Image 1 (cartoon, helix red, strand yellow):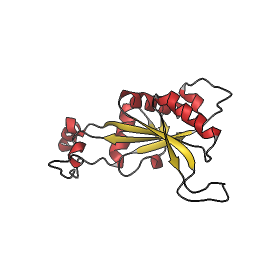
Image 2: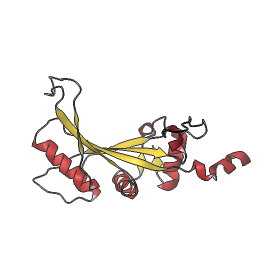
Image 3: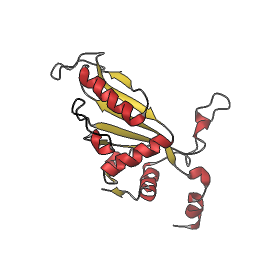
Image 4: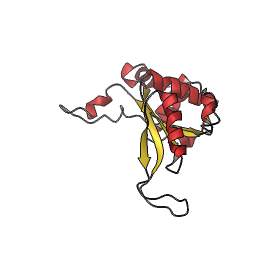
Length: 176
């Protein structure tokens, strides 16, 4: 690394942190299984989940338009960092390169929610879920505020390489 690049990495405005985590649990049907999945998400996050509806009818899967088929919850702050840590432990801190988007966000899925530390309840069943992590840098609010709104500069935007480096440094993760 040259001098300019090292100096750039020490800049506190270039630090990355977790903005939010979206936990999504898609059941594919609107019955008792969906409410149980919502209860699992509520146990995990401590927040009440929001239900999502299907956009179109798929007869082969038995899904009708505007039918509730999944639930999701958005978690921010310390709770988000704790959930990310627990989710990455399940994946053994190994993610594929294709899990990372070009905008610097990344996501992964787990097959069983009981791996996150929730006790198994036979009446609930086992649900898989998707984690989607949104990263941010200080100064990102400039593009969202109402007064004196400006564009985010080219070097302030988060790239795929930035998020890969952050994941490897912070969690000592392995990219497959």
